[in-house]
Image (cartoon, rainbow, N blue to C red):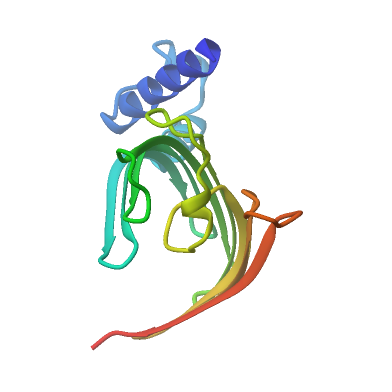
Length: 190
């Protein structure tokens, strides 16, 4: 685990150095000017950001995901890797809110300006604050769970479409295996 943290810190340091416009190799005479520019433009596509997602449903409970992530973006490829703390509380559960570790990744490939294919995965650990199982969260798709999925997205001017599947890896009560569902969303911007 320490090796991954050191690798992440090294990667972030190189990325920040490239964003400042400094040369990554002090002896730039051995590297041609075009190779040096290509290396800088490749590293500038990597970014580090933070995101906080909060939702509350008065009938079920609330969830919050404080996430730090690294992403790479080019003309056709978009990749994200993130991790952070997940706070979830079901109103059906009398215990204190659960604090969990969340890790997720997303890979997206643009077919053209309109359509793109994507794959994603998320892991949500067991609760750090409660020893009980996460059974109340497994009963509703509102709460964050470990899952994988794939789909296609489309963007037509101000109309967006998203069709895909999700497989929940945390098994439900009295269910032998993972649960798969088909998701679709349509939105229109005004």
